[in-house]
Image (cartoon, rainbow, N blue to C red):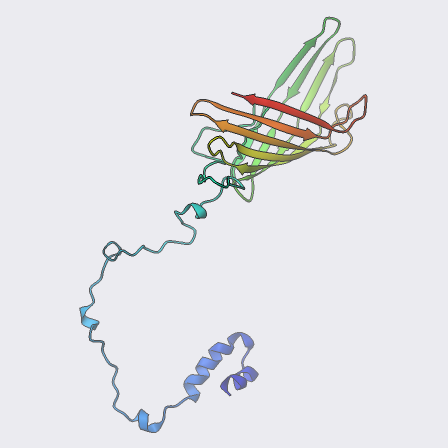
Length: 262
């Protein structure tokens, strides 16, 4: 009866509060019980309480929900774990020396970590002389911006470059290349002989100069794997599938592979 009445006069959000307040005013004990000489009892053990520390009681002190020492509560450095392994290592480690994707042909199998911004620059000079003609090429500044987003195992990648080619007996050409976009996903940590792996869905978009642009979006996929043998020796490799435009055959598919290196 009380709840039905309160539902008519009280907002829904404060229904419970109104019910409690109404109960205090509407309910009265029988007069025979109200006249009994009751007093507030005092517990017999009230004066014998001795404070006990957490160490003496063996109880674990309360910790904030964000602090946890169990492996399951630690942020994952990789998206997956090997099924039989117990290692939660892998992924970014800010206490170790900086890991870059330069200067070799194989990118690192680890990401930079959530909230970390890493900018890598480079310069490449190529000279080619086949005995009948020679060419020179300058590539700079080859910037690669790496930014860890959402989780330690996810990294956004943005690249751009300017190139200048000097061909014998021909006019020099120079300009910007197509913009590079990608995401690096840390897949697994190294577990024994099983490698640390990452995959990079990537593409170039047609933003370059007329001499260097492909004129269309060229997607690709880069699979990276590596092993750390000890503190001084590591090896790794990558396998790529990228769409490309051949100037002669106009084929739009290519495959590349880099062998493991030390």
